Image 1: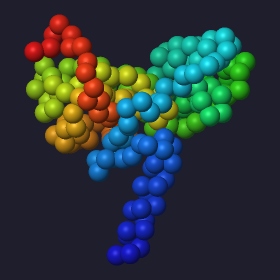
Image 2 (image 1 turned 135 degrees about the vertical axis):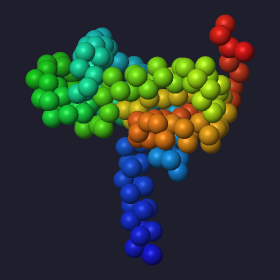
Image 3 (image 1 turned 30 degrees about the vertical axis):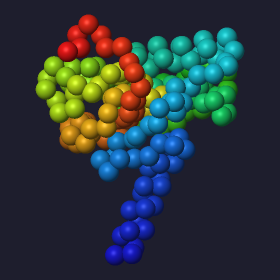
Length: 186
């Protein structure tokens, strides 16, 4: 029993090792991200880095089955590009970046993550439990996940997401601040 608990704890620590300090995994395996936590690599970057990041985004969109989200790591000031498959890694290794960079291995491609973001925008109209709480979707570049922003925590929504999508492809941020509802809001 103690060994099983230690193995479980070790797995959780390993799973969180790539996440930010204030992120934590929900019991479903979905990453919970605090409001304001930097999941997109922005900050003061020079023109060369900005161009390299833009090029990496275009490349990830063109090769979304083999390549995940790129991001600029604010702690190292490196462009981090993401390989999903061996072919993706080979493609990324063949590129010239012109800035400090590294390649990381990830589980989900940019296309899969974009498809998940797009699907989440229809949760309300599809009657998904908690779908009416979705206020935004965006890339979680740091963790290579689709970030879904909701205005209140919803266990039914997290359970739905975990049942229909790989939990390690999803991040949730609960933002209870005021927001402007669009014309489709009811």
